[in-house]
Image 1 (cartoon, rainbow, N blue to C red):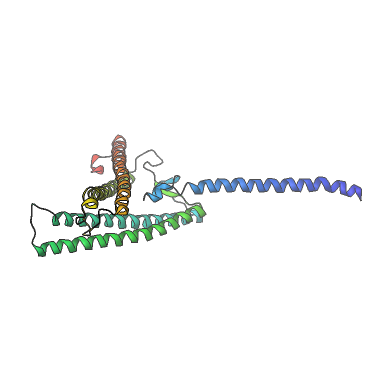
Image 2 (tube, helix red, strand yellow):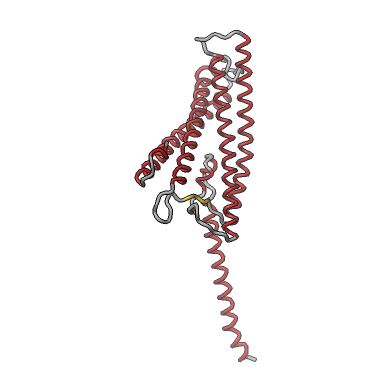
Length: 282
């Protein structure tokens, strides 16, 4: 009996060591998975640049053929992700355009160089209100679309999907004109969006500055066609906070513009050096 127990002790120790080792490996693999998942969610998402959260991408050639189930699922996810991202950007683009249209109506309303009769002023007032309401509606839709986009990012983390990008060069070292052109068009759209965002932030900053300099201390009509009391310290503090936030977003939009311009210049230079025709980049 004692001899049997002596034989079982080493066996039990071996089983315990194997179990502990297996748990340690699971914990290590779990931490690696969590680290990779964390890279998919960054402040870039909140900055409305969701594609930047996918730090690791799967670069493939356009003619690369893979038919395994994971690749097929990843390709399908990429299609849904790009469609969702395009919807978010389109809604925000339209919201910016509506806000800029409202600003034009407001400027025309107060343009002293071109007096307006009461009917024209009423029309401009209505246009201002309609465009601001449209902008608010579109931004609400963009927020809902952004929730859907985040759900797709969660799916990518869960399934291990990566954003697939087309290689600018083929496996034989030759440049892929279609990939160069597609990338150029994407960057140019990014630049237009950044310019529109900067214009909107500039308008908001000017409005907040005007409210602080004049309206909050004089009680005159605000650009939103409302009146405020000079002693309303809450309104003043709110305008100061809005001004600071808007100026930060304006700085970020301008920095984005410069970054995209640099990317465009580098892409064109890279394509020309590779022997692609200049007409491809017009």
